[in-house]
Image (cartoon, rainbow, N blue to C red; front, top):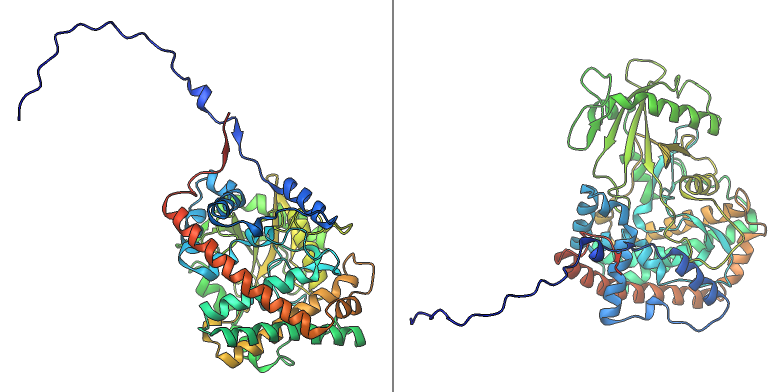
Length: 480
């Protein structure tokens, strides 16, 4: 190869040009949340204006909407380089059902302002087949019902129905392998279970005493009670305690923080005062024995701080200790999206605690809200029988039976909105009337679920591409 000859021509020296300073190329601010903008959108849609909501976006515009929404929803976790956030995004990329479960904000922004004419209830906010299960009641006995109140808010009853129907549609295929025709039957049974129970409450007003218990549960969940039961002593020593029983054992999920006992003792004392808890046979003296961080738990909440607090039981021999969970609370994904209403459950953990007190008439006495280091935390007891059903073990027939039971449990939670909540009119007959004619209402919900699932499939494909390209390593920024 011929060598290049060096030029002998002299050139004038280059002028120094002004260089950009780092200050000039820094973003002016982090991109803020869009809750207020969506609240304004909800108000305008409720008022009847013809607008262009995000559900109508397609192509690249929809992809960028999905990206921006997930970045916003996880902004704090992304900024803090949370391992849990990275793990959550990996899980969402690999599992369509988990993507549905972990992206409630995306789902509800597609519903902004909808159903303003429908009766308002204390909604669960995130209804799907995995958010029903066995948990302790106020006496520590197991009951079955709705068990996740993180997104709860006052909203049209149809928002829970639509979310639940979509959840059964997706889970039926992803976990049950059900074909389209069978999934339609499952969704119909979910809605019918809800409407049948609501009609019964409209006639007999038994919603405060209709808990599913071990003695009165349908066959499909009776087995869950039996399988979930475990003696507290065995559960404590197998899952949590050191060999000497004096505190949490360190492992891949539990990271002891024994030095934080005083801080959490104050939090427990505040909870006891707020909930009116008196030291008793079951609760002991409410003395904190140990504290740990719980890693890797949850789907939507994965990456949020979560602590377990070990309370000494009455016997003081580590056979009946209590484990109380403290999970940092956020605003509801439905905040600013639901049609404008005068009913307000509060914010963060206070809102979640209010929802639990409404939707579970005889719920966990440790369910509450406390503040730790300026952050809002939700509290609840971790019980040896807290469990939910194994969806991938259900047959086609039991999918329908389980959907019907969940629909009825949701109806009970909604029916309590005018008993223990803020609703100031008779909810049950209002819902029955609003869902008439029944055949049309059920058909509309099935169609909604099918359309929503197809849209979420496209969203999931876009998310997977963005995730592979590192789109969720940073938050949205605004540049000058």
